[in-house]
Length: 431
Ligand SMILES: O=C(O)C1=C[C@@H](OP(=O)(O)O)[C@@H](O)[C@H](O)C1
Ligand SMILES: C=C(OP(=O)(O)O)C(=O)O
Image (cartoon, rainbow, N blue to C red; front, side, top):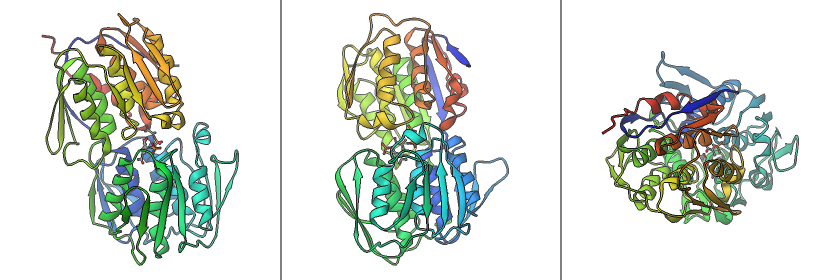
């Protein structure tokens, strides 16, 4: 297994241009594919999750052309119906490809198989399948009930009824229904049963749907009505803003190693909830400045320990767990049970690896409490569990004075293949 040893860097500063947002890239590709007209998608993310979506769309008969060596792509919309009626799709571990494609394909009157890596087959999808089945979809589990792989068969959807969906395991199920159901052309009401987690991701979904001409009426987070007779129409061009979750590592680098570190590609104008990560850093005492399209973080001294609910930023929350190692006491991250069903069981993985550094960690069902050690263990070997975010957030330990070894660093390919070389471009201007 490959390992990467990161040596301590006392002071970091500089500017990073962020890669495109994963959430926006995969939603935009699917909406562009389903729309009528041609869409120029600019600054698409280049990573495994996006490659899986691109490959799936290709197999479904959608023409997507990369313009030269750029990250600009021309997508020919199919006007609501994939031309290929039988396909076997492999979607890796990309939730943003798997869940939305499941819902869209359930409406296509075809035979489709969807599978992924072993971990994807442990990530729940039952709440989405239940919602689609309640509307008449034909979906069968090919392995364990409630989990991928799935087989979809032709069916007649009864979109006229209220479609209930649970939202407490993943918001991607609601996102998937919202994006797919306008294809019925009928008025559809989706009712969220119980709590909805990760709410800001629904804002991304609704924002992009509206750019493609589909309006959703909503009552809070409980009831979403898609008026009938709407069709996705290409807006011509969509620019993918920078990835706000990826921004968290560099902003934390500024907070832990002096800064200022500036990220370009997200800011006040962002549609991603993860820009709120900057607010949590601010609560910890970090100086944050923000423009329309950039955020900058500068350390102001020792970080303050905090007790926070991070349900709204589950991905960037992992970065706060590492920042907690530099805090002046015990930090508690709450309402993050969804960590258990992501790339790995992140609550358990985070607790195990933080303990290797000497931290005292309490792991609850939906929270983690972290007390930093007097001094961090040097050269701890951090396992990354094929989880890009484990690799990226633990790389920041090297900014706290301890060399750290990251096992299997290439797992960052899911969302940020050149993460480590970009991190290395932040200058070590020791003062
Ligand atoms: O819709 C999206 O783009 C995402 C939603 C979140 O998942 P959950 O809704 O499962 O928390 C997030 O963790 C994931 O990385 C991307
Ligand atoms: C949870 C994540 O991914 P996915 O889109 O596969 O759910 C993530 O990127 O942290």
